[in-house]
Length: 159
Length: 159
DNA sequence: GATGAAACAACCACGGC
DNA sequence: GCCGTGGTTGTTTCATC
Image (cartoon, rainbow over all chains, first blue to last red; front, side, top):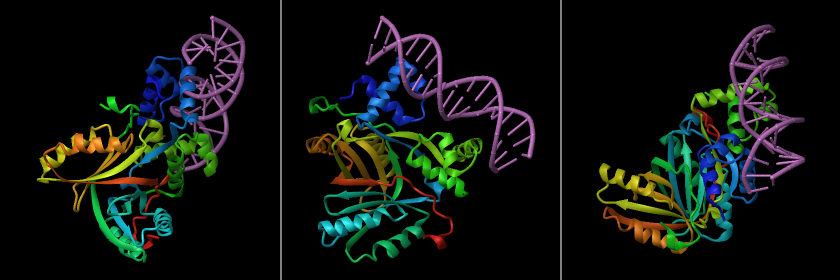
């Protein structure tokens, strides 16, 4: 699994992926070449899967966010999969959850304004025949953890 | 706002934040020094807010994701804010939505397994007195857009 | 595995267009 | 606002322990 060094590296790189290898090594008290090896190993093992710039949604002209819960009819594989592909490719969509429970989908959208949100639902979602139900929640705030730490595989020391 | 060059840079950096300045410049057909200036400007204007390593949740021992919808009682500011702080600091939580509608919160959790999910809800959430209702949806899939493009400020050319 | 040094490549401030 | 250059810094490989 991940030892202390790996965990520390993962945390540092989640917070700021642009740390130089030198800085990482200094922060952990190891040699730069050692540090480079550890980081490479994290990539090779698939622990770190990529590096992405984070953008400000308001600065991209997306000042309103919403979560749109959708129920489909019938909720079978072809219907679910084709709807998923459809909704993923809409420019307003930024993330799609396929879920169990009362609804089948939860669509996270970031749009210009409330008018745009309304147009999105009326002109794109509810046009689809397979939609049985739509429930829209405006997002007032969205907190996202900067660092996701590893959980120990043993449930007993969960906390 | 953002011109064509800015948009292209934002897209490239969202997809892979580790592109060297040289590569970015080559991809856009401009000089590296020009490219550097543009990227700096994107940071200075707050369009790009950070660079983060993406990690694999399963590789961190979090094989099950869920969305937990919570309704609070009474849903006033002190109750909402204190619950938000509480839930944000739980290690299972990876993201928190404060929303309008039937529920007040949507908590995105990533846990070890379904047993851990159950324990999380029983031992941490439903212990809180202010919780009026909890509805848990297991996440079968979570698609997240790699690139979020800017929306034009003019609603008429939405698509 | 960890280390240190040396070749290599990228960054970035500056002056000119 | 865009481009080329040159000094500076960081990365990466390799021999060694």
